[in-house]
Length: 258
Image (tube, rainbow, N blue to C red):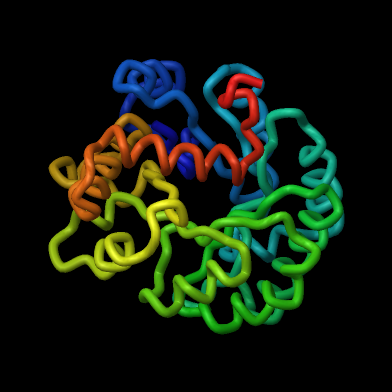
């Protein structure tokens, strides 16, 4: 299993990072993608990838933190993007729900990181909330230059998912699919299995039956089990297809044996 999106450095209630990684390994999580959300967390993400064999990093600036993405921060993140275990640029995108940074600035920073992704030939991890149309419009302009990406914690419906697939992207779903009356679960059930990857977004969005507690990479197993249930297949079959999609997206060729 792969946790395609988590924030190990944001988890402060469930032990050390070493304990979190060991716990995940024990339940069969062989790969953890730790997500950068600003310069500081991108630096930490790279350090964790250097320290732990199963951890890979992304680097970028979340739209909430677009105010922090000055020229120096972007330049330093560009340097981090050359690290061997950096597998994507992100999370980047637009968030009009909280509007913690001005929308024009969010868009300008988003485009700067899409330019970076095109330059370094890495996929992108997209955050979008209450901003799907603007996000897709921007990515449509960049899609010919990008090597793909993922809409994390996918917020849309089935038709929205099809638009994402037409861009050459996949969607990621997490613990929300275990919640009652979840639209995300309806989408995951309806779209092709090979267009979906799975995440925890730990420490957030903890799956049932642990909802209300701090999320951890090990709990991605419950997301895999729920996706298998939604698809009417075995957990092993779901794992095989989902992990291969994730490995292809992030260029984890070593997990194929060469």
